[in-house]
Image 1 (tube, protein in one colour):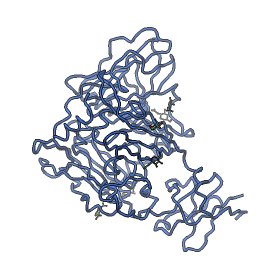
Image 2 (tube, protein in one colour):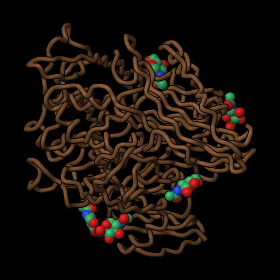
Image 3 (tube, rainbow, N blue to C red):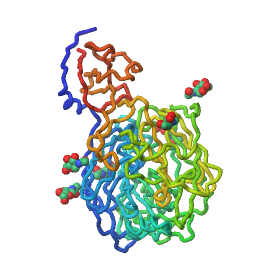
Image 4 (tube, rainbow, N blue to C red):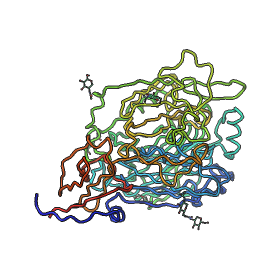
Length: 572
Ligand SMILES: *[C@@H]1O[C@H](CO)[C@@H](O)[C@H](O)[C@H]1NC(C)=O
Ligand SMILES: *[C@@H]1O[C@H](CO)[C@@H](O)[C@H](O)[C@H]1NC(C)=O
Ligand SMILES: *[C@@H]1O[C@H](CO)[C@@H](O)[C@H](O)[C@H]1NC(C)=O
Ligand SMILES: *[C@@H]1O[C@H](CO)[C@@H](O)[C@H](O)[C@H]1NC(C)=O
Ligand SMILES: *[C@@H]1O[C@H](CO)[C@@H](O)[C@H](O)[C@H]1NC(C)=O
Ligand SMILES: *[C@@H]1O[C@H](CO)[C@@H](O)[C@H](O)[C@H]1NC(C)=O
């Protein structure tokens, strides 16, 4: 067994334990109204720390991100971190189905981990029509240093946030939708909050290669993005490394992000970046300038033309392929999981429809048009009062025979933890008209998850639903407990908090130290591995042995939530 020194049995481990956790990044955001002019005309916008677009967040895989948001608007506010998987943590997903909004004049601190992810994402406000006037910004997740990235480090990297722009206040746009009208056509397009100008947005040194992270943060229109004389090598999308094809232009659908590499290998001068609407009768265009540091001369007024038609776009989409041998956030290649062999346990077919009953426009999925109740669905479920707030499974897994009418109600499906479910979307989100797409989801992340249209009008008027994935264990292995600072509202406001989830908790101290902790006899314990890897295990009473936790036991909770007793052993 070797010599062992039993270091401690104590609760004050907490402080030391933090060192072993993944690094923390702290942000304070003051969210205010301010004057902006993305189309050259001033209007009211939403700023974060005075900035529009909002500040970028730079994180690295597994970082803990803590953002204290102060709401200085006169309306409730929430942010979502689009694309962040929020493992075990739908508490921080920032939609009205999971969180109470931050009341005007108050603050709330988001805390989430960008666990096992890389890539380019953006955050945005989900309340009202706030996103129409700002509050969005880029969110990077860099690879950890030890994970190889399948291209050389760029000289620098730049955000390119594209979007359509409606030129009205968010209150006006919300009134349109609340009164049953459509948003209509946008009045322009912007790139990083402006639609023209000859001053450079970014500069490039000749011969160097830059990474551009391009996202469509708009409400409605797909946009084509291109840079004069500069092809783009696509390297990442949706958090995965892709086969590195080169494109003259990219169709960027609402909500989508791409990372591309661009080499400054042309004559030194200015060049236009161009974003223009696709599939619209009247094409709206924005341009911004990139300058070579040794540049002489302005950009040519001859803008590269946009492609035409749906077929081009569909073909481009089909050309996107995962690089199966590259590693993403983890050292193992992205392709090492054999998706083809998975047995699908359930298929849900969702069909989009709309109705103008009573002169009011609504959108729905399988005949139900979602509305957010005053009590967030997740909280109602957690506090055991779901039946007072919503009914599960108003819609079936197949659409009803007729979709003429829409029922307006919270739209919540429930799913079994760890099932593989295929969802077939007929003509809704991001899918080309008159076509369908199938996606497969593993419900290995317990929580309440929003499946929504990326189109703001459709989403606001009901084209979204929630999928509740409950782990039968009520265990910390599967889901974090309600955060202490979680805002409560609606009927759960004054209810006593349910007991926190139980589970075994690992505390990491230093590489050669292991903590063996047993919080309580959870039903999970027998299913956990029982081989100590370093050091030894002391068992004091209790019918179950103490369990080892180490850095290799991936997938185990590593958040300190308190525990009864701990033995720490060190191997000499
Ligand atoms: C946010 O506002 C507070 C109060 O006005 C101020 O003290 C603080 O410096 C601001 N923080 C940032 C990051 O702008
Ligand atoms: C984020 O990372 C990029 C790329 O390294 C860098 O250019 C930028 O300055 C960073 N931003 C902040 C706020 O740290
Ligand atoms: C509000 O901000 C203060 C710091 O100014 C912080 O101590 C508190 O936890 C925040 N409130 C919430 C609900 O996150
Ligand atoms: C895929 O990634 C691997 C590993 O980084 C790299 O060697 C290879 O060139 C990439 N393949 C393509 C087609 O991009
Ligand atoms: C899928 O089901 C088949 C037949 O029951 C079985 O042989 C196979 O192992 C299953 N695959 C997985 C990944 O569970
Ligand atoms: C959905 O919830 C109902 C009611 O709680 C339950 O009977 C059913 O088993 C659940 N279905 C799934 C797939 O979890």
